[in-house]
Amino acid sequence: MRIDVLSIFPSYFDGLTLSLLGKAQHAGIIDLRVHDLRDWTSDRHNTVDDTPYGGGAGMVMKPEPWGLALDDVAGPSDTAGAERPTIIFPSPAGEVFTQKTARALATHEHLVFGCGRYEGIDERVFEYAADLGEVRLISLGDYVLNGGEVATMAMIEAIGRLIPGVVGNPESLVEESHEDGLLEYPSYTKPASWRERAVPDILLSGNHGAIATWRREQQFERTRLRRPDLLPDDETSQS
Ligand code: 6GU
Image (tube, rainbow, N blue to C red; front, side, top):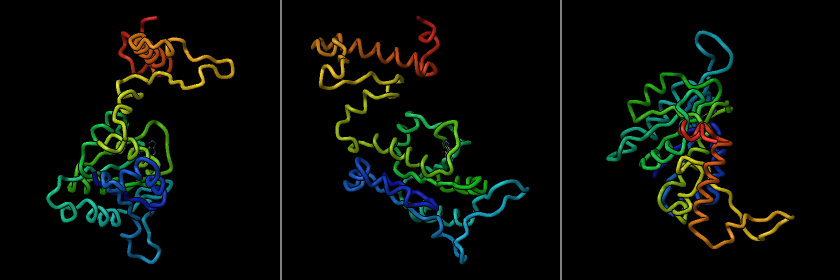
């Protein structure tokens, strides 16, 4: 998978060279290209923002650098023969990102992330980008970050680990929170007793069927307590 990131703070993404995603880049599974949006400015101050038409607080990102940058990283000449890229603009005004979103995006060949700052990007940039690829505005949740960078990193990590070969043991992807719509069961390791706290007996029993049943119950119990919104209505109402 090729991933292009457009940002005025490219060094945010240095962290993506660490750990599993770093290895995936060395292995050629993920081709991550982080770009400085200011490379597509031509004035002396590398200006990327201006005051909003109609007035109001804050600044808006100018369309010109975005247009040139998108032409270069998402335009037809740069993606010849390949499928059109999916162009993602992280935004608190977008659709909410979930594990389902991550699974779908992990099958794409080419993702482009456009990280906005300030009060946002000139609206015409989204319209223009739709000529180059499939445009999605995506939010991490109902709170506000200072820009798209941290959201983009979270999405790249969630998507990247679902690409075959990125996570060494694919089985570890299966029994995780959200993969089956429930929160994950609690985990324990040695010692069997720690500071007077015992590991649940069932996990020491060697009875694999009983352990699987207990873990499933724990998943439902935790989901009911912490995230009842994830359960179908009939399963929240009982007990
Ligand atoms: Cl994707 N961007 C910003 N700026 N804030 C957010 C967000 C995204 N998701 C949640 N809050």
